Length: 105
Image 1 (cartoon, one colour):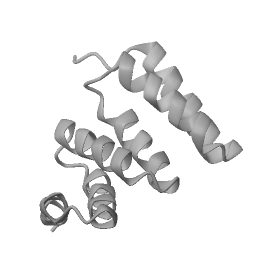
Image 2: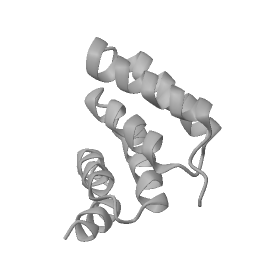
Image 3: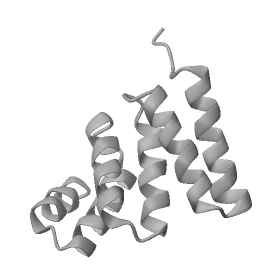
């Protein structure tokens, strides 16, 4: 069976979800997700979550970068493509926006 992401990466991702959903602290959530991406750079979940936190902060460049990374790692992740499309549109990056919107159909 394929091994999942390292336990410490999962803990940081869970901590991010706690800060995002229970505390409402976007910056602490983003820091936790960023730690998870460093520990498990090929795991799409924390990249998506970091992109989501940055979207809520209006930090479109980071949101786009993180969501594209998540979508690259998991091309079936419509939510990552969707958020990438939102971020690219906000930035006026029409090439990236077109790619993202085409991916979600």
